[in-house]
Image (cartoon, rainbow, N blue to C red; front, side, top):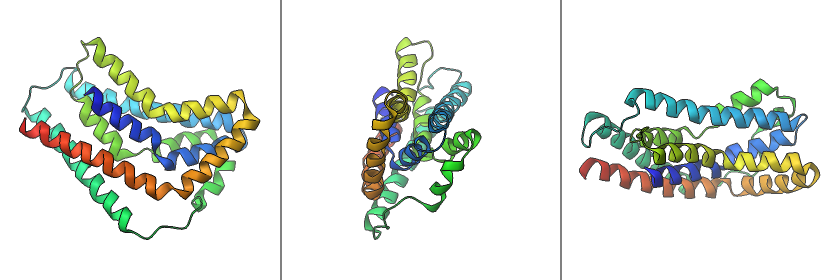
Length: 214
């Protein structure tokens, strides 16, 4: 479970779309507050998903080859295959023009509530779903599993935390460097999505198959 969460959490935090939107929020009016609203909402989303899974499992990992463990493996397999197919499709598709989507121009006038809602909209739900399927194996009587769940949430939010703290500590320098990062993300967005989709998709496919046959 731990390594699966490490892979999924890393892929979530490296996603280019939410990072680009977050940088735009930070550079807008009241950017630090909007960034904090986005960050907290993003983290709350992950916590809520994990809490729902643990409520369903009772905090005890299901027996191997039981209905819950088989369902979790099937979910991981389905998401993995879907990510691989999506990555292959994006790889063959002609590259799109660089630049942010038109809706990002409205972020300067976004409210704190809008910034918080945007975090839920930009969550990579396929990866969050894979994380939820992995959390099915968590044992709340184990301190190691508690640390793994906390580490997963923090890892999936790490990029946002670093950018928020950087902006608070050195706003002038951070603004220039984060805008340069946003430009790079926009220019390489397609390649990043393809790479993350294929790597995580293949990993989830392999772990899903292993969970079904082992």
